[in-house]
Length: 91
Image (cartoon, rainbow, N blue to C red; front, side, top):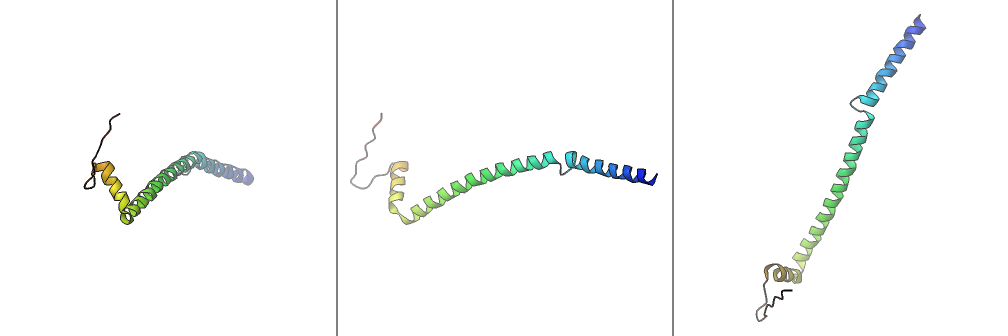
């Protein structure tokens, strides 16, 4: 009789553990979903880090080189040096 009760208690505990494993707060499917979300966030973080690196190098170039500033002023604002003539060719 005692062996039967112990067996039933152990089976009940095993069932509870399996229920938690498959449908509980830390279930297998939730862990998989979280791993996928982490992988997606890491990919986004890497893209943002590349953009930050690009912008940091552009800032460094702007601080050190006058040529870059001159090129930005010419292309973006249409500025010219004194004595130059700006010619815009439309295709």
